[in-house]
Length: 257
Length: 257
Image 1: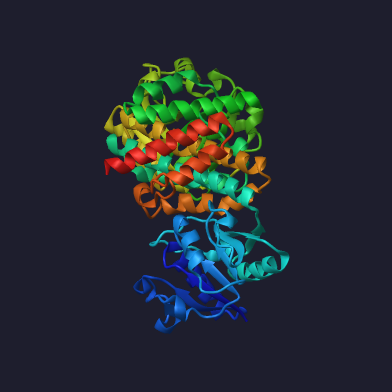
Image 2 (image 1 turned 90 degrees about the vertical axis):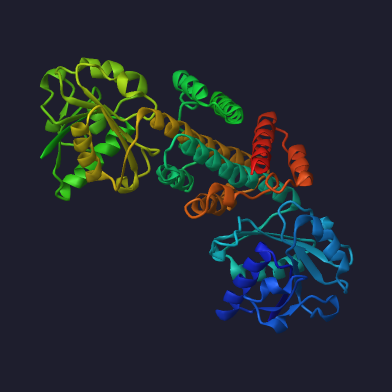
């Protein structure tokens, strides 16, 4: 058995705990032996009490320690670990491998997904991006990751940085555009529900077409009359700025081709 | 039977033709009697030749004429119709009801979805936004729309304008952010595939959470260090402008709450 310990009790930690327990129930060779957390009560619904500790001195021995805490706590937590030369990874998209303390062997175990407390996800479909300092550690990370996901990739720190920035565009910024769409609907007494099939289809198209192939709309076809009508319609200065910025960017892309 | 004629042979026209034919096969009381198009060859895979015409003089009689042509051709096409006082609608999100010629009774039959030639859609799930000048015409439009869709709403011209602008944000602009994400991946030799589960989940979340509840990321949590690292990473001036504009907009929204 490969013994794993998770450190943390936030969203990512909780989803990882659930995923490892599911894989254990299906007979995988990965064993989640313990979880460390300052807030042990966060975890009582997920784990037996004897598997949770908030005391570094009672930390068990394991083949892999996964630090799933907020980005700015990673360096500090990794420096508090009461041992040396073991494999320690963090789960962040934006933190360098070298943020981890030099006392231990370093790695990254980054599940690229948006996790919400109130929405379950199928971990098998979540890409896990792995990085390590040496090949033996990579093999172990690969085994552990494949126990919970069907989409495991080797991604170095520079690539991971690119992925994280790209993820901000396709997740955080996209969701913000949903919010603007919802606010425009609210202002004009139209149910946002009417836009939901369009939102679903927009994401769905990208599974089979490239974004270039899928692009439609007034900016793409240089429909100046519609663009001007939309700009006149938008009374919110902020939305207008976003409308103009993204319209110009689409037109610019078109010219490039 | 309610007799319907479609004028046009583009994406929307073709999807409507297929939807009406499906509903006819299932025994609905709507009959697609004819399609008018200058480019009759566009339709030969969809319809028997005797149902297609490119000659205004052979246009059949019907209860409803649906003009599914490009926005700037609507006024012109509607003025060429060789009859008076019949019900004529267009299918555009951004064109006013009054763009239609005064010779006939006016209406709008706007299916709010993004149509691609190479991707089938289930018309039943597509919202259709209806508008008419009088209640009798509305009842007829409602019957026709409900034969092909489960999501039919009365939407006036002002609301439709708002929906169309909102649709640009949640579809055209969202797709452009996918394109930027894809280009960032390409530049750094990361497969865009890794982002697809995130794209799917981002859209999926909106079906059960409000956009406000679903918002995450460095802008939302005011994580200045990550924002600065991302800005330093983006060498493309255009992407940097979009990053800054949308980050500020998310932060501004946060303060409003």
